[in-house]
Image 1 (cartoon, helix red, strand yellow):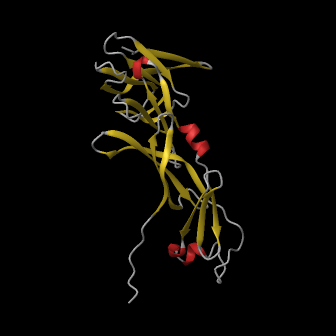
Image 2 (image 1 turned 120 degrees about the vertical axis):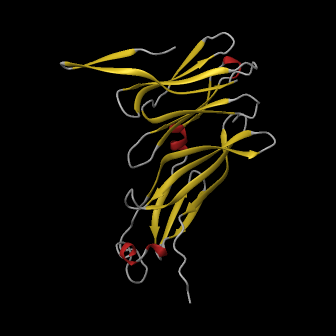
Image 3 (image 1 turned 90 degrees about the horizontal axis):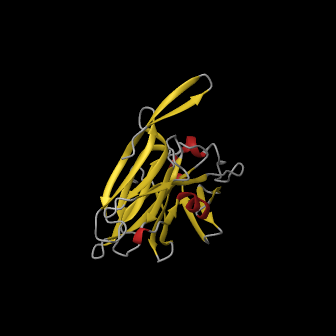
Amino acid sequence: MYKQIQKHSYGNYTHLRKISLLDMKQGDVNGDGIIDNVYLYGNKSNGIFADNITLIIQDGHSNQSTTVNLQNNAGYSARLFLGDFSKDNVQDILVSIDSGGSGGYGIFYIYSFKNNILHEMFDVEKYNKEYKFNVNYEDFYKVSVGSPHLDVLFTIDISNKGYDYLSQYYNENGKLKQPIKGEVLALGALYPIVTNEKSMGYDLLAIQRIIGTSNSDTIGYVENLMTWNGTQFTSLRLSVAILGTRLISLY
């Protein structure tokens, strides 16, 4: 349907890249009761990285195709998921792409195609702008994760990090040696989940990693359970999850 070879010229040499089918799902995404075809295509030179990733929706009745150009369209393991996020008994389209790299960021879009009208329901860039947090180390081995915009504050106890870690930032009396900041990274995972088995509609669980002074220092995760309210995804429960430690006997 959509295979061809693209030729790119760079200086004195030419590089051939093949447009490949990255994923394909079938389901009724326009609500007419007929199964439609949904494709992800992209340019692949080798391995699992692809760029110019494009969403193609083919109407199962007319065979007409709609092309959706993604704003962020390069990454790894591009994949599709069809599910009813809008709770209107018509499947919506989730596009997920891994950005690669140590940050573990993800690229996510959700589209409705009911009545053959394309509507963007979720955009990862808009989400990342909305869910920003300040991460500050506090006296007595605490880390605060807060957002004035969202009017929320979480406090994480890091006293179990051990002497070598804590002595970098704290004096013996538990006071900070100097102000230290961490970071909540951009959205790393977006999971469809069923919270009501009777309706079989899907909600979303969005996860962002909380780090300390380096990317390898994971302190916890911001978890956001969201549902569609008819016009947008809204948060049902915003929480922080922390990593467990070894159980040390006090006796």
